[in-house]
Image (cartoon, rainbow, N blue to C red; front, side, top):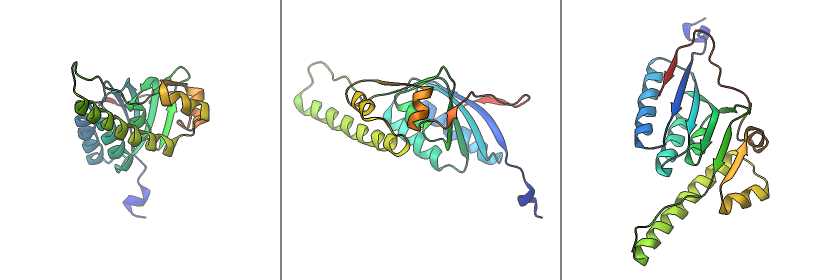
Length: 186
């Protein structure tokens, strides 16, 4: 037997919280770099975020979904807006019984006195963001027609039980690092 064939998968435990923005992107890039150097095979990540910037969330989703690490994602409280897309990068996903998810269409505020051509650019950007995020949602989850209808015009809130039915999570379960595990914040 070679050393590689007898090696046990290496797991690590992390927390990731805050706004989905360029700072979070940088922190995740650095953390994944360290994980790969340390030979981590599976990273358990507790995510707590009310969302942020669409482009940063899409970047993190694409990066984490294709990283050489198996991400297991957990929602222990709230994962909302673009953070839901980030959450979906996990190959396995869990939510605590009391956790919630919220998804909605993109939104923006125009500058007072904005001209029609500037407003058209904003609308085109929002539609493009919605198309990108909805494609990822539809790839990973199955909502009932009435839930898609709510999502079309309003915030759609899902409990952990709702998320399990939709396939957003593997199961209802808590982030529970084993005793003695080193817990790192990203």
